[in-house]
Length: 298
Image (cartoon, rainbow, N blue to C red; front, side, top):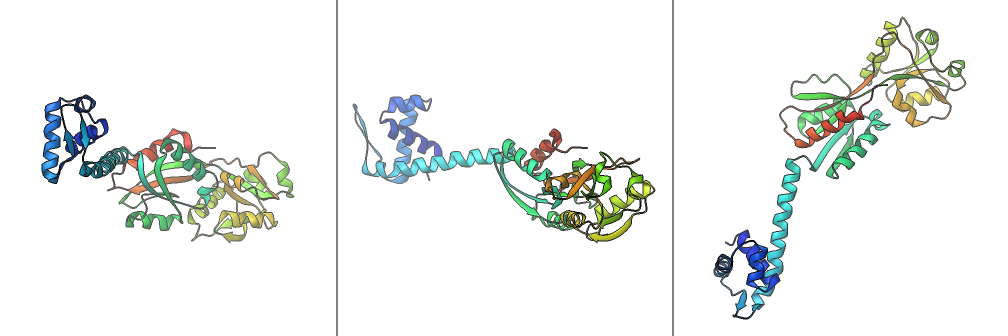
């Protein structure tokens, strides 16, 4: 069977039609160049070149074999390049899960940063709740996941990807919307649209915990799962809600957003999780992008 060095020698001579120029191009002398082509011809059992003291010509077999040899060399070079790019975390496919709320602001910024830093990486994005993402990670159908903390499974590792403040969402006609900033005392007695304790456990525990620490007993009128649904009820005038600052990107008409000053504020967090036993250079690249100021604390 022939090897790549024999193909490279043949291609150089066939393209130059001159042994001296081909040898110089390959940074070698003419005798070993001639031997490589002779070995190739013996392996193929055909004559590829007609040689004379004055010229070199391709035989019919040589003319037929040249494009095939060039194609094999291009494939080998491309395979080498792609393999090195993947090993360095600069190419490949990244299967990334994300929550719906992360798509309001953080995910578009992350995707933009990834495409700028790693243009040869193909992203495969899947919207899933945090619980389902954790299971997909463990099953190997996701490479990384943007989930709500905590990530406690021993098979997984995680790092904080984003921290953002909670803000008050309220009907634009509510008198509180005339203020630039709200405090805990401003929320007492207001009807609250809260998060469902099972389907939206992270936000449910975070919001109620903060309100309890501030001495607020919220008057809950509705409990929902999705932030956009909560904002729809705020717009309808059914109550106020605490939502992550990124929800402002949804631009609900008739809904005002105001900062909330709490004695012990805690940000809304999003973490990047991946399998502990997977040594994927793309994850290393992703973490580096996250650590470059992409996650913000308001």
